[in-house]
Image (cartoon, rainbow, N blue to C red; front, side, top):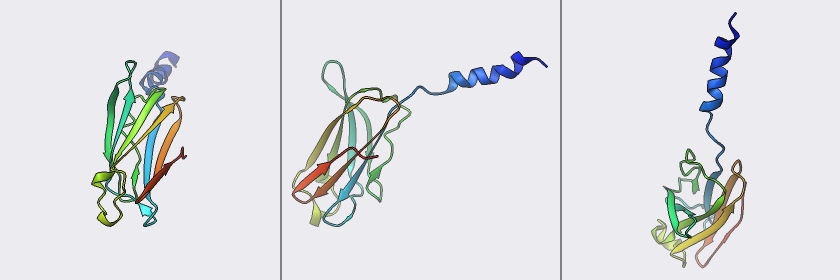
Length: 132
């Protein structure tokens, strides 16, 4: 049997495998109501070498308050990123936070890592941490 013909698909699959890319996700938790903050617009930006923020993804939180992906087919390489939450568009007027915008800046250091950056909101405050 011709081993070259057998090994060719294996070799080609190695080249077709995408490069390592960090995964970035987020979650909005409404502390006042104890549920996920649904339908919050979220923008993900990356700081370029000139220090300018470049938008690399946009999404809205789902019914559970989560953004599971910002189109991770893009190569989120090590660097400085920012999540910007448009809280002025928060759909629950009674619990709309005092802060109309929340910006969280963080560093991606591992191209193979998963970076889950949640934000816990209340009407007059917010908190964040690196989740898993």
